[in-house]
Length: 178
Image 1 (tube, one colour):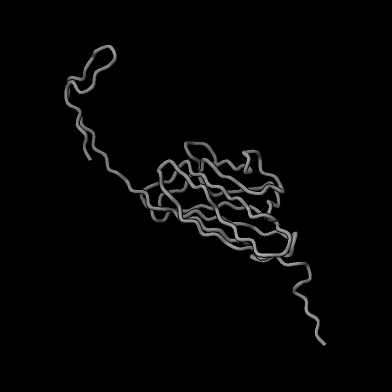
Image 2 (cartoon, helix red, strand yellow):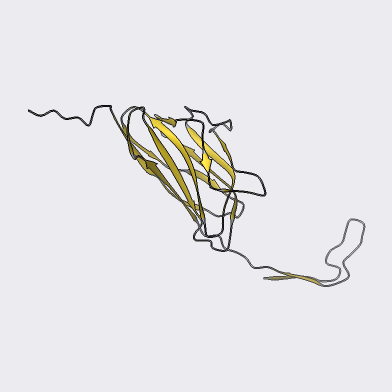
């Protein structure tokens, strides 16, 4: 797309106008949705045990566009909490600022938090990155979890794929037969 500014099209507050014709040409880039997937390892624990969560953010659909100033929220279902304060990422910085992780209220992450928020992250053009942390859950049951609230500088959207953590009661896998 080309936009042309003719002489006199632009005038400053002091009354000075442009005297030359200027043109600028740009290529519009369409940002395809990125994919955010979640996995638990192990996918089953006993109540009070821990599982490592890996959130993978894939930008494979955009080989010519880095995704910057990316944010997302991971609010855990009732009964699931952060097992420790450590949240790590392979996602890059945005404009020289490293990704930031907070609890759902914007404070530092701590064991017992009910979710994690990430901001200021970047995903390379055509690449991917991961976010990793540990959770615990109780009582026994199935805990489906997914990320939400995705945004970025490019205005792109995300396809979210969640995962289920299965929590059993200690000793529930034992059987007695006669």
